[in-house]
Structure formats: structure tokens, C-alpha cells
Image (cartoon, rainbow, N blue to C red; front, top):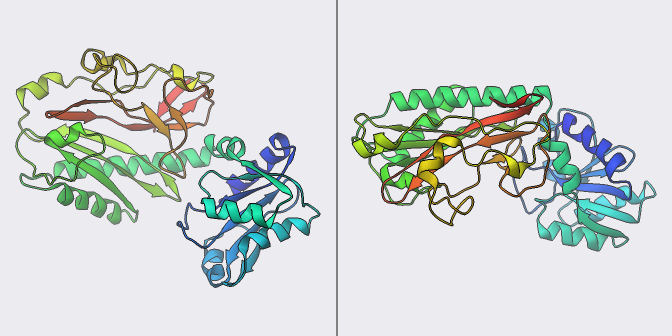
Length: 349
């Protein structure tokens, strides 16, 4: 948990969680999922506490960039009882308890057993508000991650050779990020398999005229990029080439726009995406998914660019923008960039 993320959350608890007492957040961004609880206890007032397995204390302290009270638990102890005890010592034994959305049910279940005086509720209203709007520093980290991703993708497209497999190309992407000192990767789709937005298990070899779709990114100081580029290997198939247009554009998004009111889908898609009741909305057959998703410390997070959403867009919110066309048995095209909401509208990283 970054200090910059922790402080706004505490302010939100004071403002928006008036009936509540604390939120228990799993720290996953640089730790990883585990059956052993690593939890952050944030009271309505007072200093937060980290509850950590005793044998992991040293590794945790290496990753902490700010001072915080740490309480350890031994293997035979209950970490949720230690979390509840930290609150009891502050005189807090009843109230509403917010639990972060990705917390495993087992942690939630043990927590409400250890603290029966609390009403357990979703902490989404706090955590989403805290993470949804990025600071200038966070936006700069995301911009640099996107810039690195585009540099790697350019080099990979320039290195393509006939008979390469998806795995061969994927390893080129990983190697490119590694040379930059970053961890990253990509989904690679070739030819007709690109018509499946998230790919196929069937092996593919690159051949003349194949569509090449590369979708991936990296993390910089924990902040993610998610970029997709699509090209045609050497000589384009005539039918494919005839359907590729100048399709890189921003949805007409601005502050105070509701997430369900963006320009769906992008105007260039209209002739090719229509004529079915599947997908984004009635009338679109070849655009089968939402326009984008929030991005930040997680590759996919709130808010989402999906029709019907009532969340109001605000400056500092960040999203992927990924319109696509997917024609089964033929090819798929997707161009994805990450964007941020500014005072005057959407801006690409």
C-alpha cells in the first residue's frame, strides 16, 4: 500500500464512512495472493496497522516505503483476532466494518467471527473512490509504462518472421521489457485466431497476410499499462485490407459524463460492427465487449466503460480505450490505448 493511497482512504473514511470504524484491505499489489493473511487495518481515526505473518515481516519491511505499525502473527495464531484486537485496544468494538472487494471469503468469514460486534459491509465506496482518481505522479508513472510498452511493441513488429509462433512472439515481448528492466508480457493472436478477443489454445504459425494482434503491457512502480496493436504481416489479404480503416480515435468523453454515455462504439466501427443483438448493445455483432476498463495498480479495475453505467467520470480517472472488430473465421482487429480524464476531456497516454 503506497502512502499516497493510504492517506486519501483515511480521509474518505472520515468523510464518507461516518458510521464505520475500519476497512480491512488485502495488500496484493506487490505481494501476491496467499492463504496467509496480510491485512491493513484502517481505523476511522488514528494510525493504521499492518497484520503480517511473523516469518514474512522482514520481506514486508523491505517493501514498505513509509513508517507504519506492524503486528505479526505466528502460524498457530489467528490473524483476524489480532486485527480485531488492534481495534479493541483503541476502544473500537462495534460499528460497520468495510472489507475490500478482492478479500478472499475465508478472511472475511474469519474476520466477522473474530469481531462479532461489527456489521461487515463492502468497502467499495471507499476503495474505488480512493483508487479511481490518480494523482499527477501516478499519471506520470502510467504514461511512462505506456511509452515503454509502445517502444517494445514497435521493436517486436519490426522483428517478425514467417513461421514464428504466438509463443515465439510473446518471448520477444518479454525480452524487450526485460532489457528495459521491467516485467511485462503480451497476448499474441495470429490470423483467424485474432477474431477471438482473448485468443485460442490452438497453435498458430505466422504466414503471409496474417493479422498480428499483440495485447499486453508492463508495470512501473506497480502502475500498469495495457496496450494493443494490430498489423498485417507483409502483403495484406485484399479482403482484410479493404476493411482496415483509420480506426484510432478517442471516445467523446469528458468530465461529468456518465460511463454509459461515451461515444459507443467509435464512429469508424459503425459499418462493420452492426447487425446483431450480441455484444456491446443490440445492433452490434462484431464488437463483442465493452469499450474499456479502469486501470492503475491493477490491470483491470473500476470504473468500466460499459453502456448503462451511472458512475460520473471525473478528472484523474484512467481507462483503457479498446474498440475492436472480430469476424469469426477471418480476423480480428483491436487498437487499445490507455487514457486519462482531464478537465477538457480524454487524453491518451
